[in-house]
Image 1 (cartoon, one colour):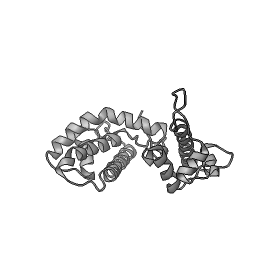
Image 2: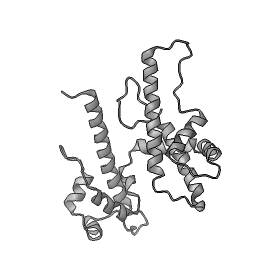
Image 3: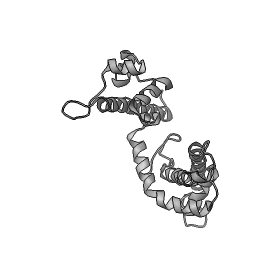
Image 4: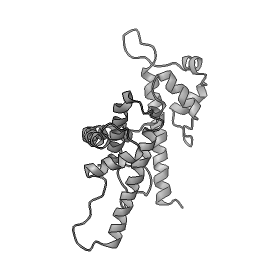
Length: 220
């Protein structure tokens, strides 16, 4: 018997597989040599093999959906394709929802930049700064009911949402600020990364009673 959690996890995995397949197919169809009529051309399997060493069977498995078969490339395969395409490897794994998240985060960026700049002054930010930015902007803590005696179960649910957001802010900050050298000429870059991590954390939807407990979701 499949649980709701298991079904949700399977759906997300299927969505990532579909996104990967569609991303590779779309990118390879327009990133090859230009056609004689000036239109974007695609890659032939033989040319991909010459430049990457990836066999036609590997490419076919990545491009086509066959019943019972899912694309399961290793990191080396994805790295070779990304190098061929001239893009970051992570872009091959992006879903439409991921791009939507980025668009929404950019909308928050100016506000988060001002807050991060005020907090940091001339210092460098860390994963902890991301948390402080959201607190200063006033969007970190989930709004509580105005009644004096809140329902204990509702309080526990809201506390759980806040704890999940706290973990997400530190995670994004750690990932985006990892190995960032603290040189004066890179201070603005550090500031932007702190602000972007805060913007992303603010846009990631927190689970409700009807949402799966885990997994990346996005605010409506």
